[in-house]
Image (cartoon, rainbow, N blue to C red; front, side, top):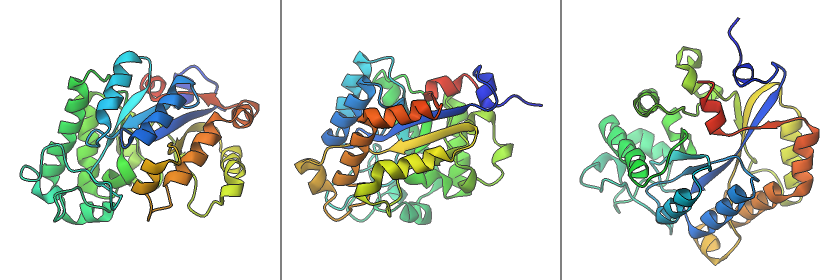
Length: 282
């Protein structure tokens, strides 16, 4: 019988491994401040970077001085905030199927799936990875902003090929990846990914996360959090988008920084791991 990821990393087969992962690093200064704080205090074990976003240079500065940080590339093909936008690294003329009428990446991931050409997708995503490489970031893995690359068979093939090309594990979700068992091991390191649901009330934030975690079976799981401060910058960016907006991100930051929550993880017996750890089992 093939050893599980847990066993390949030296843990018993009934272990519950957990990646605590901060999304969207580089998106804004608010997100960066919160993510840097969480990485430095080891409240999270992993993060991934949105290379086309305005605050990517701040991430580069952090990464150069923190080579121990587990930093993947959050491959980005859409720009979801109505007043805070970004475009493709390659520019609208080089990848015309990736931009909207204003020259930005589309607001919605569904619009990307409807309009984007595979050649443009591959070119832009390679540019994002190589820009991070040239900046001196030792990427640990690839994942996909708003799961866009899991929403099209052609995009999934491109995503897997990028993982092979750059020798990086990639995040896939069983429920969004048909025939996942046929993909290389580097695509099947995590059994489940979860985050707060938009229906979760502010008053039950920690309880909601703890209920999700408590019922997880043995295996490898990722808790995805979206960190930030409820400040002027983040409120302006997300004024019409409360889900994953300023208040949401502050609640996630309060969660991971909470001694009560970290004690809960320890009492539940979770083994905290990073994507750098998981790569050893690929």
